Image 1 (cartoon, rainbow, N blue to C red):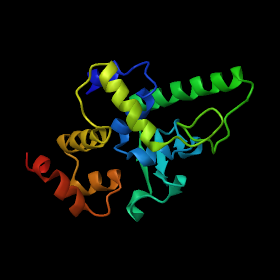
Image 2 (image 1 turned 180 degrees about the vertical axis):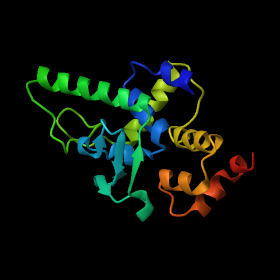
Image 3 (image 1 turned 90 degrees about the horizontal axis):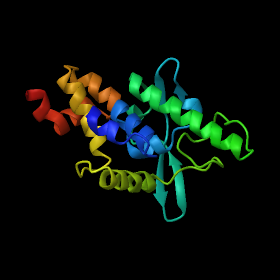
Image 4 (image 1 turned 90 degrees about the vertical axis):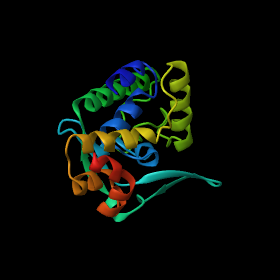
Length: 182
């Protein structure tokens, strides 16, 4: 996994992939993150909303379930990736004469503070997979990789379920029971 992530270094998808692998967050949840949802010093992220693309445009909504609102710890590699992304974003804004980032600006939005289209994350992922010659997996597979790593590390089903924002451990078991058995 770390080898695949290293192959993404320098690509615009890198901090997004690092966040997906490090937290198991869904694509819409990642797209909806604001800078004030991150506490990089404490290595934590609050997931409180999700984005979806509709015919009318991008819509901010609550996570899929009440359990979807959660705080998740960030591994060190994700904190580094997010700090680098923030620095690059700030440098670009200063070069453009826009100034500092407001706390409510989207983490992965454009330099004007507009939300990213969640589908653009998948498009960038497919581009990175192709250009960096990575295994052909979907962006959502990063969430499954995260869950698989937690299970392999011996975390119990309740802890994995909470981290993923599942409505119940039963959902986690139905999706990942084969891994818990192993």
